[in-house]
Structures are given as structure tokens and as C-alpha cells.
Image (tube, rainbow, N blue to C red; front, top):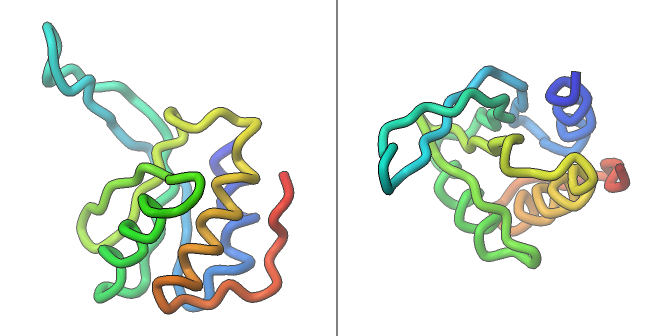
Length: 112
């Protein structure tokens, strides 16, 4: 499954953080269905409580920006919002953001 493959590639450069693919739920967020739930898979990145907000801010400020959310001291990347052809771009942005937020980018694979 796509979530597992993306997670395995991301874990190579996460230092002491842990990434896992888990079921998620998004929301439409407005209009006629503001509370309508959209099932999804998310990549949950955790392990450093003090830096989840910094990692999210670095991802949002990156080039290209990666829109994520923070929930229970973890960063969530909703795969429903990422084109499968862009997984490598998101991985590269994640590794760059880890460096900017005090993480260890290491020598991880950055191509799809």
C-alpha cells in the first residue's frame, strides 16, 4: 500500500522520530458540509514533542510548502492531498524541514 511505502522511505532520514501510515479523517471545512468526514491515510510523524510545531512551521514555509496539521504532538501529512507522483517532492521537503527544525536529515533517499 502507498502509505507503507512512503513511510518506509521517510523513516530512513528521520533521526529519532517515527513515521507511520495510519487511517485518518479530513473535513470538507465549509459550505454545505462543514463537518463532512473524508476518510484518508495519513503519515504521522512523532517522537519529539517539543518540535512538532517547529517541524510543521518549517514544512509550511518550505519551497514548495507542504500543508500539514499537528495533532497530539505529531505532524500529520494527509496523503489524500498529495498526488502520488509528488511523494518524492514531499519526502525531500520533509527531510529539508527536519534539518531546519533541528532534526537529522542524514543520507536518506530523496527520489520517488
